[in-house]
Image (cartoon, rainbow over all chains, first blue to last red; front, side, top):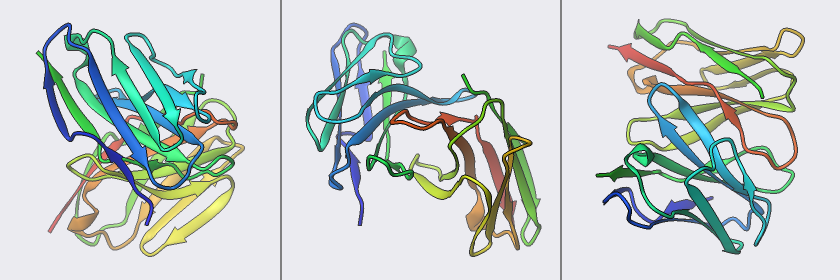
Length: 112
Length: 109
């Protein structure tokens, strides 16, 4: 059974803190994605990665960075968290050449 | 950039009713996805379409490439179908998906 896990379901951080969101997949997928989901806006792509050490900006990369040192792990980093980064963050993975994306359960981040 | 529009935004229906959710997009695509999100956040993929029609149980998805339009139908709807249904499109390559804003469906017993 395919599995994408995220390090936390809920997270509360203070403005200015550095925040790490971790995503791990056990399917040996090459492609991994970070999205954020906000009411009225739907899901939006922050960053994606073709493969290890490869990364590409999505539609809303400002304020975020990513790291992909191992194939199974894709980290999203908020260098200095701000209140407008309060959101639901969803990770997904996909086999290269495949179509189906497999989503993690999401991390609901609150920045105070 | 593709614009993905879904309608309706909210839909409340009685158990047993036939449900239709629509999705239109502005630019040609390589694939269209229908996703389901239950309260709590988890998203599951229902269908991937590049042409024609697919059926899975009580769910049917269709796509018209020329009209840039897709529909998701639910027959004999049930309260457990209550969820947010999301349309998403892909343009090929390794890019992520572009999503519609979702349709919040409530099926009342």
